[in-house]
Structures are given as structure tokens and as C-alpha cells.
Image (cartoon, rainbow, N blue to C red; front, side, top):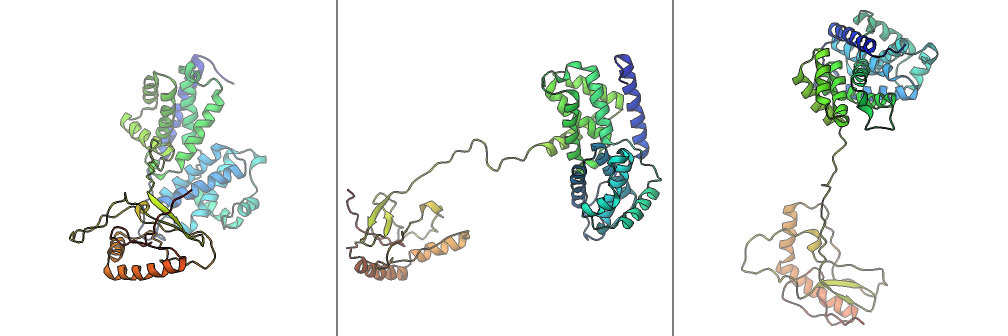
Length: 386
């Protein structure tokens, strides 16, 4: 039965007080620590990975979000009480999941243990899951009814709608059930973040609600202050929790700035063709001159686009290129400098002249030197293009 007016407000206030009292009795701070030896304890990454796995199982077996929230709560409570090894983490997680399903779900929706062990690929037999269930129940004093963050999310959302009926006015195509389902997805994502384990479930739920209410109504701060007073929470912790939640729920930043400008600077080359169909490029006369032989400074590292080019298209073997193609991929800076030194070395220059004469005789073209610098591709005389 749904109450209206003051009765609904009183009922929500009573539910909130009961949930906060229950949380104060059961909650214990537990943040997994990075262990130097992976076999000693469960790391934060392993804890988050197993919760992602339970989230997939929830979707696979079509269970309620409350089942997943209770399973995560049982898992964190057990890990806070027992120092478990990573090799038992899958068995602990699937046992907490099965306990939560038997607590929340209807009888016809509870998965069969044999099917759950087989389809979840947990690596545990049904007998091992039953033994782990007994261990978990003993450590938790057979008390599985605790206030989860999802319970607080439902209460805070209902209180916000009861005190601010115009809350969903900016969302005309969304009813309260759809809106709380959207917030539930955000909460389930936050449950798989070990950094948020330092906050109580009530504080985490209020942080998610406050971030959403801030987008919808202008007087959102007054509403959050009212909820803070009812829940008897610290505002500084809420601010800290809001920052971490916003950071966790924010989309991934783009790899490049959104307003990047890409400038294409084409090279100026003369196109020379030979009878065999080879294409050669060499810098035009407007290009920068060669280095001064008297200048002993280290040359500036050029970009890949400023290096001289030599390309060849498929052609018969009658014409051979004077020089081989050189690939420079992922070259270190020092190696690049050494390549520049070899490029302007006298010995390489003599080899380039000899190869140049051979290429000229093979292609049947008169090759003339330009400038005085040596290029990997010998400079050829430009021809007029019709």
C-alpha cells in the first residue's frame, strides 16, 4: 500500500532511521591493500574483477539488482572478517551470490546450485560451494539482513520525490521507476570500485542522488541538506564521496583534445620519370640548402614528413633503383642523429656518386648533381610535364 502526504513522509523517515541503525551495527571499514606477495591476500584489483564477474552472472541468470547488492555486501563483510587467499576468491564470491539469491529472489527464480556451478565457470563443485556457505554464515553470525547501498538509494530517491514533486519535470519521458533504475545502474558500477569502500553505503547512495538532483532542479542543495540532516551524515565526507563518484562515473577522456587542428605541410618535389616506369622524387631548388661544412653543431631532428622520399611503383626489372629504400620506424633519437651523420659522410657521398652513375646508365637518363649536398635518392633533371 502506498501512502500519500504526511503518512508517506513519516513512513520514509522511519525506514531511513531503521536502515541507518542497521548499518551502524553491521558496517566495518575494509579497503583491500596491495600485497607485495599476491598469494598472501586479495588485492583491490582482484576484488573489483570478481564483482564485475558477479554483475555478469546477475544478467545471465536474470536476477534482481538487490541480489547483486546484497552479494557484494556479504562479500565485503566476509573479507573484512577473514584474511582469505586469492585462490579461494571465486568460491567465496559465488557462495555469497548464491546466499543472496536465496535471500532476495522468489523460489522459482533461485538458480539450481548444480547449474550455477556449471554455467558460472567458477571452478568449484556444488559440495565446495555448500562448505563455503557454512563458513560464511558462521563468520557473519548467520545475519544476512543488512542495509545495502541500494536500499538507501531507494529511500533517498523516494524522499526526494515526495518533497520535490517537480523533480522529474526536466525529464518528461521518464517515470520514477525508470529514473531509479538509471541510478541503480550507476550504483552497481560504483560497487566495483574499491576506492569507494571507505564510505558507508548510505553516503555512497546519497552522493549518487545528489549528483543527479543537481542536474534537475535549481534548489538541489537545500534538498541535499535536508537529506543530510535526516541521515545524520558529515557534509565533508559527502563532498569527498561526490568527487570520487563523479570521477568514477565520468566517461573516458578523449585521446586528443576536441578542438585539435591538423596542419598538412606538403613537400615541394620535382617529379622525374624514366622509361621503365620508375617514379623518383627529389627536393626542388626552393628547399633548404645542405648543411654548412664549417658548422659542427648537432643537426636538428627532422620530422618524418621532412625526410627525402624515394618511391617506386611496380615495373619490369630493366631499371634498378640507385639506392635501397630505408625504413625508419620507431627509431631512437640518438640513432636518428647517427643516421644523419652517415648521410653527410664523405664515404657515403662517394658511394652515392658511383651508384648514381650506374643508375643513370641503366635508365638511360642524364643525371646532374644539384647544390652540392648528397641525398639518399640522386637528384635527376626535371622534365616538362605535358
